[in-house]
Length: 506
Image (cartoon, rainbow, N blue to C red; front, top):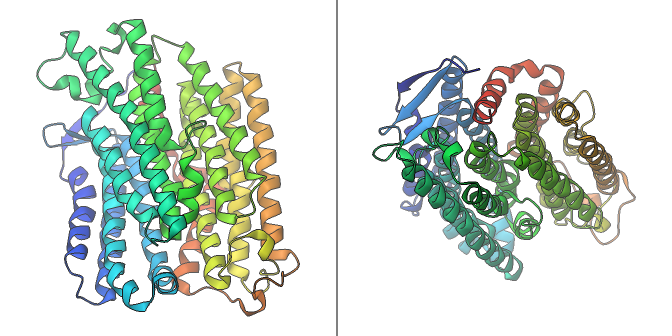
């Protein structure tokens, strides 16, 4: 089966990442202006990216593929889905940062230094968003690698932003492991280009275009194709936090400022999964054994992440390891290569972006109110932070896959896809990991919000966070509930994105 699509030249793919990139440059070059200017520019630029993503999504669900720069930029439903997710979570993270970043920065580096470094934060934040969007709209194999590496450079400086010993250690580990890991992806992309050009079927620079490579992938020698897939899995899999390539993730998520943790867990690792899916799925038709490998890798990631999360006392590290586990569901679903598997994996990608962004915002609210993030130092916050506690419960139940929240629908779809493929062992592992996730997050919620207050932290003085912080939390909680009760809201876009991958995989 083939889908009838039409292409249309558009400025939207370029605008989606050039606007936040230019805005970041403006912020970094205007350090003498007041803080409201930097904050306003960041919120406005992220809103433009979200609007561009929604506009492109409306076009792609009608079967239109948007192109730009001589087909160097190309947005189909899959690309549009990722841009909408990045734009939405990025916009809410910018709003959340308005009240979160400056007080925390003052507490750690002093008032004078905080004022100097605030424009650096917002400039890098906008460049982080811009590079992620760029990676999702490019149609060039090498530029895809460059964009993924650019996200590492921008976000690495943000991981180490507090510039103390823990932050510097986390930032160094993050940059070293991801830079080394992503080099394997470069080798994989070069192999794809070399083999595509060697077929003689693609003229000019078409061998660099991802949309053209799938036409000739079946002509690649088997050993070369399998080596290419291995390199891409190591490279982009490291960026995505897939086990066993995940050691950078807990430190980076825990030590970064909370708005950056939201972006790292909510969207950056999803962008890496996108890059992995774009580049490896072209080989699935000729080498179906890769499906079993992808599901096995996803299943291993599910279990390892949540088992290690059980041992964590630091709330942000617990959520980071939970992200490792949940990315396993996305990999298992998308790795099947079937329409149902791709739909479930991509729907879970959306749900995890919403729910994990929500949970990290809640964790940041707890740190903002109490100055602590170790669960053994917390307790009894539900009565003093009712909005935060309610939102945390919604996010936890969504990640665990309980109805009527959105995580239930996406996980159920993945279970059905695995069962239809006859991989019952993977179904059992996925269900077990969900039960463990429920236990881990319920334990965390109970300890932080309903447990007996610990003497180590003055929780009696804690109070609900400002509107700019709990407002984005309520929005994400509402979206999670809406997608659970009425999943047809995102069906056209996720359906189109799943068809893109399923058609590649035929």
